[in-house]
Length: 384
Image (cartoon, rainbow, N blue to C red):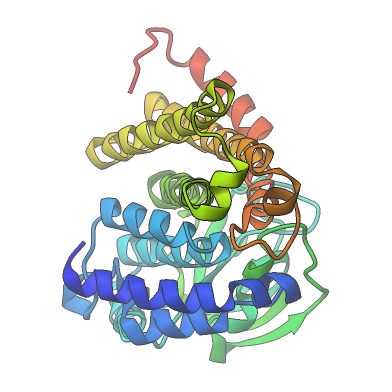
């Protein structure tokens, strides 16, 4: 990271740390952390330099997300999901759309939210039951979504809908809509076990967007998902989870080597050393798989190829499982006071609650089923 990025990340980290306990307790969005992202320019991390952004790489995005995850998983997820939307808009949006939105993102004026969930369809990302009508080049949107991360605070939305005149739910569009083009209605509360500060409330979005705000053309969402949405989701989520698990482990180690911790932990004990080694092994394995998958995605001429899809899905599944298991073992090591009770400066119980969501965030079993089908297409077992 450049010195400019380091300064921006540090400013966001400070804001996230200052508000972490309050936003977790109240299940409210981290408005101060978002404000720091706007002021520091971090919202424009992956916006190309010609539009005023930092022009950072996918590697940089993973590094920044992992670092933010060490402070607050919710903040890391808000950030990396925003960058996922930026990548889709930059890669597939038309010239007019990119020139209107991306400079505003780089200036900190536009935070982007994703609207891909629908009532009743579960995790079927590539289908939609939400129809739009097209009238003289204008799309009329009326869309319910059970989960919209940061929706109340977003300045723009990337929304999935069925293509106008579609004959099947798999004909899906991705449409950009600015906040001023929509009427937003909150349909319920957000009181989850973890990831509380993502404030992923159910919402209804009604409004209109001109035809030129369709990203990639009608029916292009499958291609966008394969090339951008899927890879950046799995890489970004995994980096955030790894950061949260590594941050929790680091805080435990610092505590164990401090004056109070030395009275609790016998670091010469073979049992303690074995448990410490087990946690570190999980983190190192996830990091190795994350970095390998990042290299595969960066070099792949076709991200839809089965070996690429297999390793991406495997990364998400293993990162979700191993990061949660690492924090579970960290809680066991820390004990009741510092591992289980709220209010401990180690923050292990929050990390535990936050990471419990990882296997459910696009369910692991769904990805394992997909991998089972993909393996049948790769009889040569071409490892990515």
